[in-house]
Amino acid sequence: RGALGAASGRGPAAVWGELSRGVLRPGVPFAVHRMLYYGCYAGSPSTTPPAWTPDPEEAALTNVGRVLEARGSEIIGEAYKDPVTSFRDFHKFSNENPE
Image (cartoon, rainbow, N blue to C red; front, top):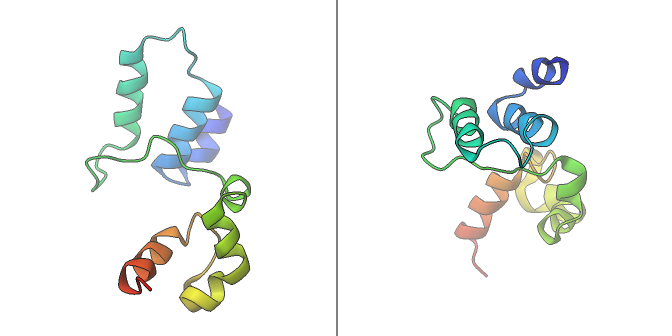
């Protein structure tokens, strides 16, 4: 309960992350997982919200994370914060600059 309270201020992905890592187990029926997942993202503009988002430490270990850690500020400028927060800006940059 305490972890969920702390996560709620960080948005639906944080709440879902806490639920999926700390509360839900394989023995809980899938329908319960699905209900809680869609409940976390109720009102989200996306029809397919993410089921998993890495924390900044995990994201930094991915190939994209390594590029962003090394050159994020150079690539997307002052908008760069960390690999997770800045991924959308990096994706936009990549589409606009395919070379």
